[in-house]
Image: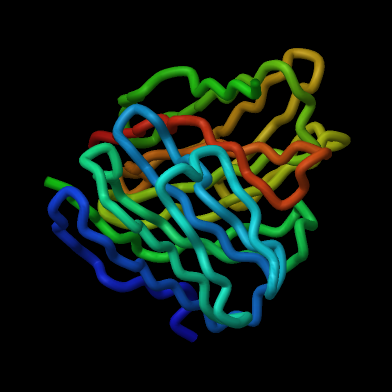
Length: 115
Length: 113
């Protein structure tokens, strides 16, 4: 099993450009998450999907959109990138539908720089 | 709003000693608390989970305690090794928003020979 995979690993954008970060998991998990990690700020939840067909805002959703394409895939889109979105983005998945006890499995991250 | 504080940004200890990391929270009572390890350039990896009605959990050289009166969790690594050097994150789950984790900023542990 590959676990949680993310593409791309690195990306440089210019202000105003758009892009989609891809995430896939092969663990048959119901829930998937997108976080950003900035120095001194810790991990902050952008959006999550408790189950296929549902998405909810997290702590910092502004400037992002998500799509739960199917049970395996959860994408994050930046419609008009801004320098403030320079960060490391992590996708994660967990088995339960908001069970709380489920541990989260993280992907390797995408390092995004917006110039 | 929920606030989670980890005692220090960095902790340096000698190999063989016990490392103790602290996680304090305010405003809400978590249903569960989790600890993760993160190595440079990689995603966090789950280590241990402790529920609000549990006082202590152990896994090999790791021990987690949970004191809901003090609103604090302690994470211990006994007989520490240089390979334990990493950033350790605590994360809590609130009963009202099950499935969502709220992370602390992490403590960077360095174990020197």
